[in-house]
Amino acid sequence: MRCAVTGASGHVGVHIVRTLIARGDQVRAIVRGKADVLDGLTLETATADVGSVGALRAGFAGREVVFHTAARISIARRDAAMVEAVNVQGTRNVLAACRAAGVRRLVYFSSIEAIESRPWDTPVDEDRPAVAPTEGSPYAVSKASAEREVLAAGNGLEVVVVNPTAIIGPLDYRPSLLGRALLAFARGRLPMIVDGGFDWVDVRDVAEAAVAAAERAPAGRRYILGGRWASMAELALLVCAEVQKRPPRLKVPYLAALAWAPISSGLTRLFGNEPLFTTYSLKVLRGNRQVSHEKAARELGYRPRDLRETIADTIRWFRDLGSLPAARFSG
Image 1 (cartoon, rainbow, N blue to C red):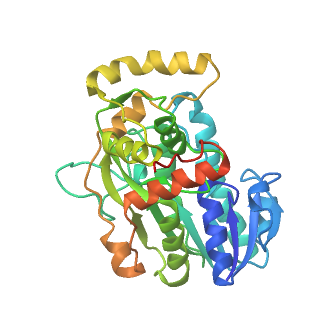
Image 2: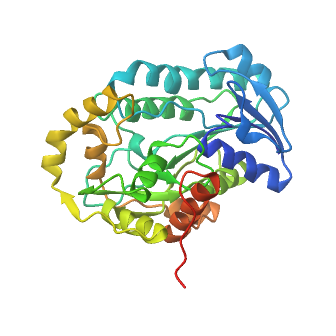
Image 3: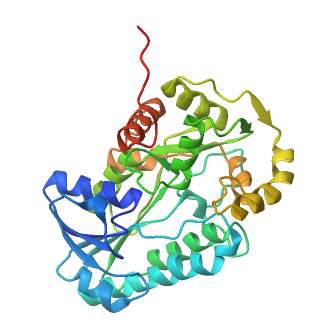
């Protein structure tokens, strides 16, 4: 395939690019500026921001498939305007550029957060509607709005939507919010565990499924790409086992963490850092534990790997990067 990848230097984008190159596809990475993480890879690069239809059109020229991974991910309500601009208007611009450049198929990266999680006593699947504009975080609402526009695109453009759950895995250079959480556990900087958890998925499995969707999914399809639900306590246990540290012993009750979140977030930002836990992220921790990826398994051959493998590989990669000390081996 002749492909273009927006957000190509991001965590998901890097893996999409590498998966395509490994298959022998022709890849053009769409980046906003210098992208050292792509150095040494056999690909073309084009500079474009999702705010510019013209630049995107030039970047998509001659491509038959576009993977749109670029997004603004934020759990802070103060970022609502930027989230809307990038995730909604930016996606409109991508759609317009795809049509103008004659792109055949668009694979749009949405999120599990864009899908209504209630009722909580039945699994979340592709039959659930997108979250309403008046519900959810600005991020969730933005992805749901963009997803609606993608699925209604028409005009000869084939579209496929993927909805990954909480993505973790190697090559998390920035690192992402979830990558920072893993590092915090590994460094012993999260002495307490918040009650709750997520459905976790390996970024490599997400990339492979998205490429499979580009190649053979029927147009208009939507696929949840999940792994398995694990509590924050289990995640900490897996991470700490890899770095030979004791996991945090104190579990904070949910309501207590919810009450403390605004103060903690304010103090964290005061010191120039982005908080790991906000009122919104804590609410997500108590979301629907049942997420079905049966449709992706059936139609795309999707088989997510074991969470323990993902954690082991991610911690090893962070070590190789120099973000964590080398492993200590006992003789």
